[in-house]
View 1 (cartoon, helix red, strand yellow):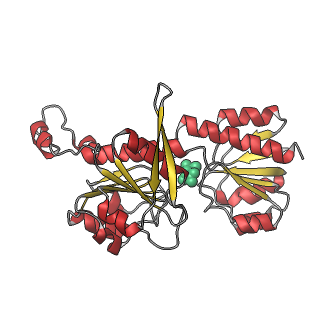
View 2 (view 1 turned 180 degrees about the vertical axis):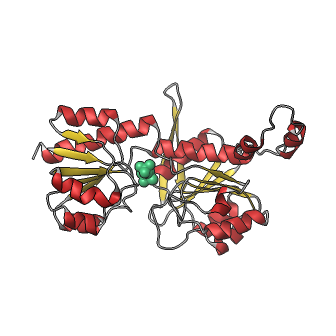
View 3 (view 1 turned 90 degrees about the horizontal axis):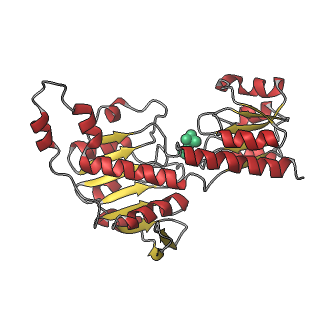
Amino acid sequence: MKILANDGISKSGVKALEKAGFEVITTKVAQEQVASFINTHDVKVLLVRSATKVKKDVIEACPGLKIIGRGGVGMDNIDVDFARQQGIHVINTPAASSESVAELVFAHLFSGVRFLHDSNRNMPLEGDTRFNELKKAYANGIELRGKTLGIIGFGRIGQAVAKMALGLGMRVIASDKYIGEAVIRVDFYNGQFINVDIKTEPIEDLLKESDFVTLHVPSQNGYIIGRDELKMMKDNVGIINAARGGVIDEVALVEALDEDRVLFAGLDVFENEPSPEMHLLMNPKISLTPHIGAATVEAQDRIGTELAEQIISLLKNN
Ligand SMILES: O=C(O)[C@H](O)COP(=O)(O)O
């Protein structure tokens, strides 16, 4: 039975699937060719990350598909309900990448408070005399310890962020439409741990209290952080979005950065993906990454292995 992993899959995933007798094809097929490739090669399982879109047109054109697998969390690139109505299993790996996304949030936070993204762009060439000038420009860094981190969206990723923030000595507050409270277990290298109970609070309170705000919500129809929400935030707040483009109003964000109301932003996702707007790319107050929250060896290994386990259990054990 053939599997097309159109956005790639880890070696561990390929190995587990091949061991179970599947053939895994990892050639990248262009979006417009996906359906015809699936049909001509008699592919039964389509695996994607966020790049390949599996919308109604593709699903309708591939009546032989048995499984659509999303290696990752967000399923906004898949018409999940429609696929399930056609009797296709739709699976994902909701827990596999939480730590990696959380670590990227801190990469952006550390970059923001110490201007790393900007100093990397500006470091002087040999013979350039601006070294001391830059030393002065980046002299007012901020420590994270003791500051308040507001986490919007307190599911798996939000809670992984909370755990790391607590480890750094930050105060953590959270807001979530569906989750009232969560016990965050902070593990130490020597096997010891502490539990910290965090009750969520209304978003308005979070925005007023936070020194840094990070978003961990699924794709939305409207902005969670728009012009009004930006106005509610503390002066010199830092904002991170490693969730989905479209949860922050980018135009209002740039305005707030330009007016020195927001100190910095860290963006891994964009309203216009994969071609983020120029006003974001050129902004010295924005630390940027190209949607790589889940892009670690460890997360992709877990994702590949979990997908393989689910596929084997759905197709081999039934
Ligand atoms: O929803 C996800 O899992 C993340 O956005 C990662 O997406 P990616 O698999 O395209 O890196």
